[in-house]
Image 1: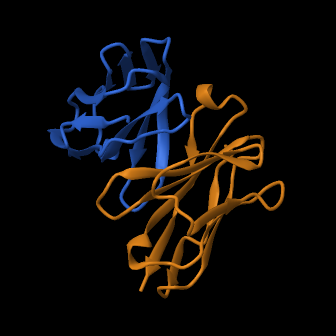
Image 2: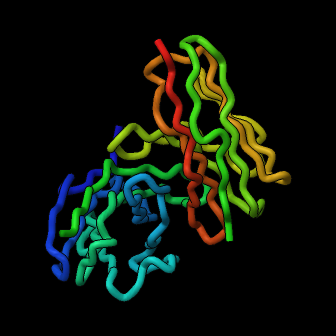
Length: 115
Length: 111
């Protein structure tokens, strides 16, 4: 069964450094998302992306965050200058051609640790 | 702003029991609602998707119901097994195409 893949599974970085989290959504999906989960807390929406542009973003997704679909397969989340509070599990998700009727499929996540 | 509440927060039951997990949401203007399970340190696995026009959806031992007007959904698990132990998350999809999660119900099935 097709799946969403994320790399790396674990990333450790120093405060102030830039990180790029990578995702390969399911190949025929058109809607892409990033969520995060701080340890012990609930899964939080960051951003949705469709047709090469952001369709929705949350208050968490400030100027330090950006997303890109650089080619036909990858979907990336960049954090420009990481802070300690960015430490979390970051999940990428995708859904099919009719987003509101299609289930969301999640990757296994990237655990980001900022020291 | 959509708020999702899941009750109970945690549940331990002996193997073989049937159980019900509850979810309530404040904004009933949703497209659909999805139930997920999350194993410790892992991603989210989709279990069931109910469209806003549907009342129920079944997959194997799982049955999810939706009462959109009252902002409620339940997940029924029949004949529970130790492998069902996980955190179960309810997630309505609102008209802004955001999926909002509850804190989940942490389920432990005792062998």
